Image 1 (cartoon, helix red, strand yellow):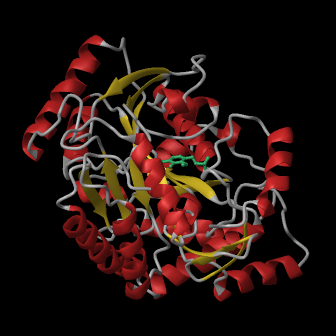
Image 2 (cartoon, rainbow, N blue to C red):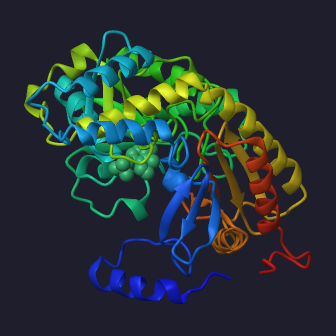
Length: 440
Ligand code: PMP
């Protein structure tokens, strides 16, 4: 076991000075002090294979020479920040690349420092364009911690404030295990979601609606994957009255899902706005909104950010973007992700407490339940999380009930590393045969 004493002092100081509601993973929380490739080392000197990447943020892995050198080069110029009042070459170059790759016609890019801010900006663009503060959002979705982003976040545990600046109506979307569409085949699921949308528009909102905001795969919500094509069917209804579609690609972007560069592409539909964050800075604060010019140009008032797209973050972004294109990491996510997904599915098939192993590319969820049913078992997920850590693997946890293991390694993961992590995961998810209690 790790040497808990190493952390005790820092943990006590953390608790004394940081708010108590800040969640920390693990009974004995980890302080990471070094990283290389897909591995990180904690203050006690233990090394872990990282299948979570700080919530899908470390997209290329740790200490990638190309990114480090790009950042160092920029730091050496002495220009760390300039604000958006000046021309920033790195920012323009990155915006060109992202716009060209976005799939959005005549796209504009606005950089922010976080996914929350990106969604906040997207909601502002949409509500101003449509002159309405009514928004559609999806149950159990997660969009961030700013006021607007929190207002469209559909889980109470992440949505503490009821003082919303938006009027939000909630849709059912992707959950296959429980809720309104549990167990439905794809076509019926889509039909039911469209009927639900029509009913919400007819009965739950008054007048114009600005936008629908949705994640193509719910991240914090537990890697919940709606049927392919659902967004296209929904989009047809939205188009009848000009409601805008915001695709939150904070977790699904940059090829993570393997089959597509953006999550929305699995549905055969193009959003009006998409938001990105996390992986593109490979750890540096870099996020933003891409959108159609007509929508993005309508709100001149917010066209400033002190740090958004600063030269250092943008330098990292360019290096990350070039790296993932050159190495075709999307294809790697597809290949290595399939290996992991297949291995988890076949290895956990007989486990009565594993309700589902689901995923796309390197975004894989294992849903743990009380044996034989769909009653969520968050305690089991906690035990599995600790067991993985004990055996040298970091994974995440999520889902509405905290009962889903979230696996989102760097997209550079090798097959050998996938096999190594798979073995640990299979072992961690194994239970005693006498009825559902984890054996550690
Ligand atoms: N949208 C999604 C889908 C996310 O997963 C997150 C972060 N978990 C956010 C938005 C918010 O991003 P940030 O934490 O960078 O503000």
